[in-house]
Image (cartoon, rainbow, N blue to C red; front, side):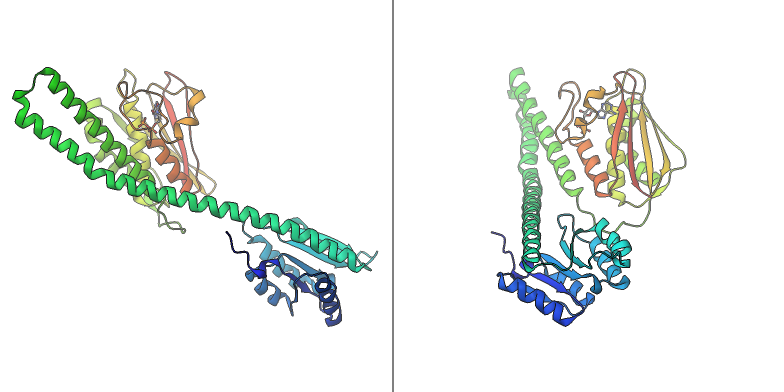
Length: 372
Ligand code: ADP
């Protein structure tokens, strides 16, 4: 069970006139609330770091400087948080507070105005409403935390499982190969066929496990953006890994000047390797031609990887990016259905986007954006 600290349930009071603050505190404490007085806006913001359910302030406490401090605090609230503010204003007259500064707070925050004179019951009711709203926000936070933990557990499980599976799979592959070599003469055709199944199965498993490992590793980036990496170097490394496939298919990969991008080299290479590899694997009858280009799109580079392959029905343009989703059987095209999921995961980590435009029989163009 989540340990909701006492601090998170308290009301923080900000009123420049000592007697006002003491009266408000008394009113709330009499109704069983935990209310604490803050000496200044700096004190309030420091207290907010430890948690609070509601802030109760008078307009006199919120000069231009103080409002600025609050506005700055509001902009860095976590997504689940929308801390309720209750602000007591003066009756009737349009003060500079109600006309300008209050607006700033209202745009960013969850603000309720109470016009003075205000009865203690009204203040208490407003605080109670704020507290209820805050409790719902805490529930949302708890849900998010549980989800994040579950995700981490799952990722850890996938990583450990795929890591530990590598060795027994390799044993099967090696020993079926040895049986074939050493005892192949003793086996009839059916025996050889069975052995081939074992070997083929082990190879597919090996690839699946490697891809799963690559998928779980694609998360491991630091928060800050890495130094710029040359995308051409990443493409060259991908081409080197794909050299056999490129040669067998007489494929051509074209690109001219391409930018440096703020991604880790291994991620950039994985992206290109998956996209170029697919462009060749899902080829049409004509020799595969892949062309890569990039253009500036705001703070991002927009890359295009175009091929002249079999194309993809627009019905599947989203689902192909999900893990294990494939449009073909293993007999038609070998694969694990993880490649594009890895691409999406990498691009997501850099706050970019990836999508495809294609039609059956007309080639495909994969687009992705990455930080410039
Ligand atoms: P895999 O290639 O292992 O099946 P991917 O995640 O890389 O897995 O791709 C998912 C599916 O998207 C593929 O099974 C294929 O049907 C389709 N696809 C991916 N790239 C292309 C492409 N360039 N042209 C046509 N289809 C593609």
